[in-house]
Each structure stands twice: as C-alpha cells, then as structure tokens.
Image (cartoon, rainbow, N blue to C red; front, side, top):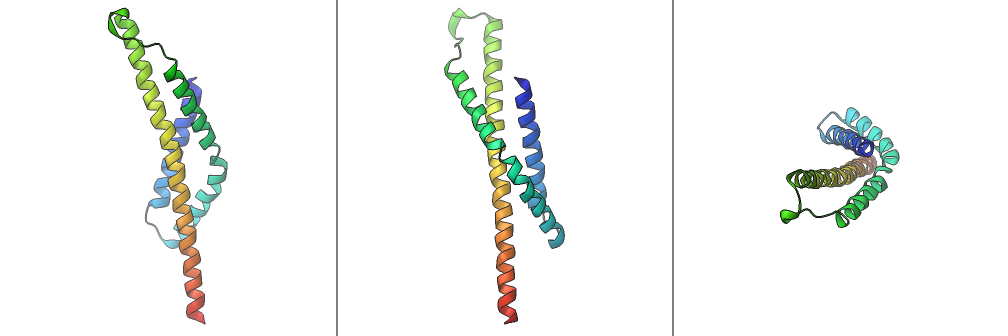
Length: 129
C-alpha cells in the first residue's frame, strides 16, 4: 500500500520542480525550451489525474467504513493507531489534491506561454505589413 503513495509523492515532487522551472523568470530562449519540455511532459503526466482521483475515492471509502475509536471502548494503543490512520489519510488527501493542482498549474502556465508567443507572432506580422 505504501508504494502507491511513494510513487505519488515522487510525481508531486517532480511536478513541483517543473512548476518552479516554468514560473521562474529566465531569458526568452531558455524559457521557451523549458515550456516546450514541460508541454511534452504534460501528456504522459495526464495519467496522474485518474490515479489521484482513484486514490481519493479509496480514501473516502476507507474513511466511511473505518471503525470509530471514541470513548472508553478503546485502549490507548487502539486510539493511537486510529489517530495515526486519520493523520495518514489527511496527508494522502493533501498529496492527491496537490498532484492535481500542480498538474493544472503547469498546464495553464504552458498554455499561457503558447498564447503569448502566438500573439507576439501576430503582432510582429502586423508591424511588418
């Protein structure tokens, strides 16, 4: 079970690195190359979205069917185990949501960069005429 969360955490770290590279100010030539590389990476990374969505559904199902440990019914060990599972579930939800948000941010920045480039080309053509 931990392998899927480790993979998702590595994907989120890679997406965060790409998001930082895409949003950092840099010379035009370098920026266009970085955005082109990020655009190429976006298509294979689309698989992260259904994976994260499935993990969110799995977390929701587990949360709905989790045994509640409250009151004097539980021992301290059971209560600690219950709280740890709640904290892990919350961490995993944050991980899934951040994977989706980072993907969306990278997609939008790449799209904006392409639109700006197209508008600059149109402006350049109009100035030449």
